[in-house]
Image 1 (cartoon, one colour):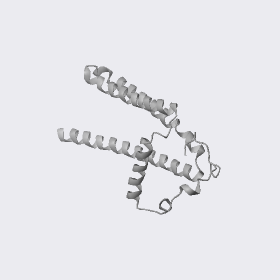
Image 2 (cartoon, helix red, strand yellow; image 1 turned 120 degrees about the horizontal axis):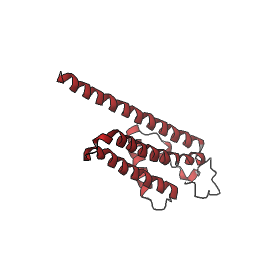
Image 3 (cartoon, one colour; image 1 turned 30 degrees about the horizontal axis):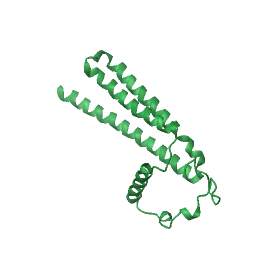
Image 4 (spheres, one colour; image 1 turned 45 degrees about the vertical axis):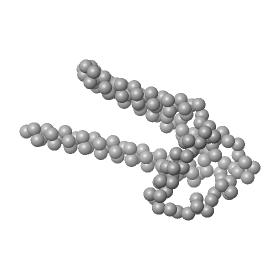
Length: 157
């Protein structure tokens, strides 16, 4: 149920319609199978034309896509003979992307207020876990880069 859909008489914002919960939804399955089913569920929901998406959400998606394009352009400018502006180009690319990403994420936080407390908590845990995973990937990428660069430097001696 989206925030724009009216509640049915048997529903309240805190309790889902009992008829909508199937026996399958109440059973625990393996983590890998649950992940695959969840991805299929999201793919199906993404393709569903009956689900309306707010115009601000569409705009933030366009902004995020545009910022990725602008960031890529700024990343390749130093290769096009503008090497002396490399740091400035990298800072601009990073700034465009981070600003668009913040707008994208903040625009979606409001959905938590209309979810049941349990669903809001699970969504929050998914967001925090994904953020921590992203930070771990970034830190490991930097460590890997440092190891490669240090290895090249040490091998050159």
